[in-house]
Amino acid sequence: MIEIKDFIKEIETEIEEIELGTLKPETEFRKLETWSSMHALIILAMVDTNHDVTLTGEELRNCVTIQDLYNLVKSKKA
Amino acid sequence: MAQFTSSNVSIKGIAACVPKNTESNNDYTHIDEDERKLLIKTTGIEYRRVVKKGVTGSDVCYEAGEKLIADLGWNKNEIELLVYVSQSKDYFAPSTATILQDRLGLPKSTIAFDSSLGCSGYVYGLSMISAYMNMTKIKKAILLVGDISTFALTPLDKSTYPLFGDAGTATALEYDENASSMHYSLGTDGSGYDAIILPGGCLRSPYDEEMYKMVEVEKGITRSKGNVWLKGLDVFTFSVTVVPPSLKELMAYANQTPDSIDYFVMHQANLLMNETIRKKLKIAPEKVPYSLRDFGNTSSASIPLTIVTQLADEINSLNTDKTFMFSGFGVGLSWASVIVKSSKIHISKLVEI
Image (cartoon, rainbow over all chains, first blue to last red; front, side):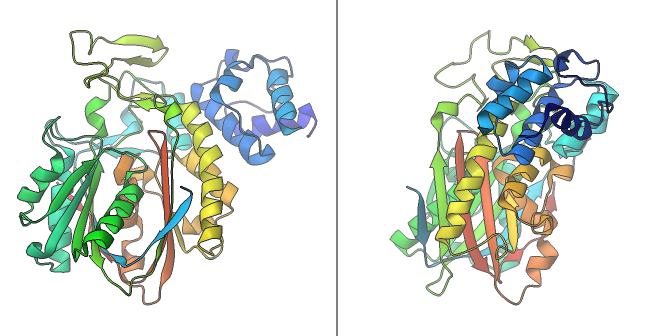
């Protein structure tokens, strides 16, 4: 599994509305001004394509911060 | 049942009909401009065809059926099997297939019945026709597949309204002992029955004065029991988890590989989901046509509509056999895929009413 800083870069690249360098591990992503429910779908697709991990909607809903999301993907990959 | 093979049936032609009336997601003002742009980019859906009130699935399928029968020059008296696959029937009772038998002028010896399936319905319909033709040795059959999804949508629900369009299709099949085999994979997971659901109006939740009461469930999503409810993330997870492995197994069963498939026509759900599936299967993008941009998600009609609108010229000019893989997945939850070889499928020009 890649480092969290690279995971953040993947998200920032995939979601054009989020500028590079904006996200931190502690960022609560749903509270971002530019956040839309469509971004949840984009994150599911990105995690699936780049990491071969399929998250459920429920799992994603339980993540608050980027760190939570990273930990979840890492644990499912293991 | 995992995979199985049917023989002796060939697809002779495919036609589709859509309403002329077009709606653009660029005009969908229930969400702001940034979200609208993101929605169009992510779903790949820009335009949708929407029927006028009162037009049914059987109306659009009838038009497609007439066009196809005329194009093929078929004698209607030889068509003795009609299957109507749809989740938007004309009446609770009788079945819509019986109405279509009469309206199309098919003989009274016709076997006609409905099947209530959505996204997976086209491939299911092909398998039902194949089974009946092998049982009966009926020479000619017509499969009518389509949905009017827009009747149950409200613009107040951003998670459904911008996605769906209306369409009806017709596929002609013939009993032919020289036909190439068709290799199928069908499956079901009813535990996800409420991932895509139109809850009100049937026996589990009959019509009452509450049925059309609008309830806000979250920002941008206000709906009633008379509307389609969609759990987008759950459908996404289901589709990318179940569909790629089932297609890999089907390809192995049919001695095919991602490289040997010439055309992979998927149910048109949304671009992000379909592309995730395509990438997992490692099928080249040029083999995977989309009608999403112009027609949206057309439910059961999406595979034949994509063939008619995106592949007509190529298929009509084929002179060697090509390998097609069709895959439908969604409401049910239900999925169905087929691999078939052919060079002689007549694709009719799109009918617009």
